[in-house]
Amino acid sequence: MNIREAGAHDQDAMWEIFHEVVAAGDTWVFDADTPRSFMIDYWFHPGTLSYVAEQDGRVLGMYLLRPNQPGHGSHVANAGYMVASTARGLGVGEAMGEHSIQQAGRLGYKAIQFNYVVSTNEAAVRLWKKIGFEIVGTLPGAFKHPSLGYVDVYVMFRRL
Image 1 (cartoon, rainbow, N blue to C red):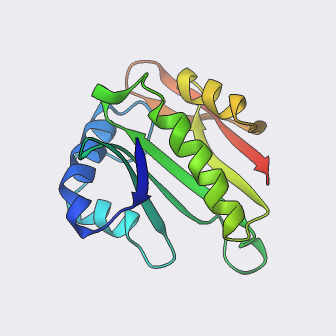
Image 2 (cartoon, rainbow, N blue to C red; image 1 turned 60 degrees about the vertical axis):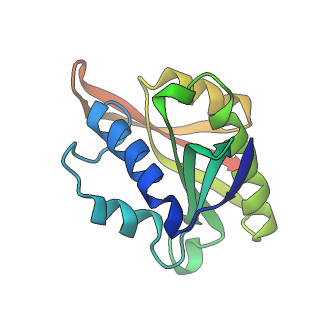
Image 3 (cartoon, one colour; image 1 turned 135 degrees about the vertical axis):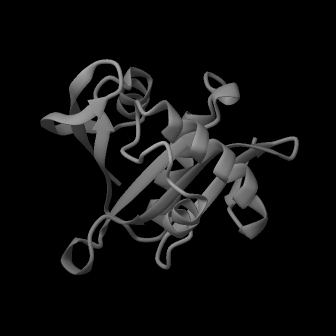
């Protein structure tokens, strides 16, 4: 598996993953009808670094890395990850998580914070704990899950 910076030529594959993930409605806050233009702006916004994980020329997942806050909070990174359903369970998320930790350190960040990890996304919570993130806060009922109703959201943090 190769993880590299994403480019304009990756946008079709990234859109497929983004659309699939948000359509499920169980891990990200975006509506199922979020337009492609929003995805492109979100993942390729100035100050955001976007990466794709690929194997045999096929994009399996993607992540972004950016400052969590401006100014006095810019020493803490924020990241978001999406994996194609056909690639889940293959270690793509873990590889991207480890890659993002390395990249954040290389870029001078002191920590990474995830602001919004849906508590029922057990695979993600388990993975982030495995690679050193801790739950530092719980937002009660902050996510409207399509089948479970209002569920908690975790804030997760890892020092670098």
